[in-house]
Image (tube, one colour):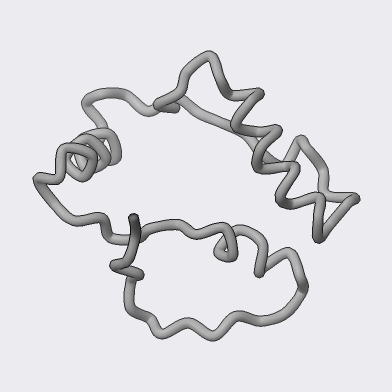
Amino acid sequence: MEYEGNEQDVKLALLNLIWQRRPTYSADSITFRHISKKSPAHKKALATYRKAIRADWTLQVDDLLSPLSGKKQKRSGKPFRGGP
């Protein structure tokens, strides 16, 4: 995790959003794992951060919360290219 040592703060922020729609959502469902600096995921994330490449997907709050509502989402099949 990029914010190593802050896992609990990130988890709590996510849970505060999730619990608005699903108060019984288990905190144990959110876990973090270390990604090696040699992994393709790390290389891609770093290149995206440095703006050497574009992100494949920009996660929005509704991307996290919509599945929790129990409603099926309509997906275009295209990655979201928007963002800040």
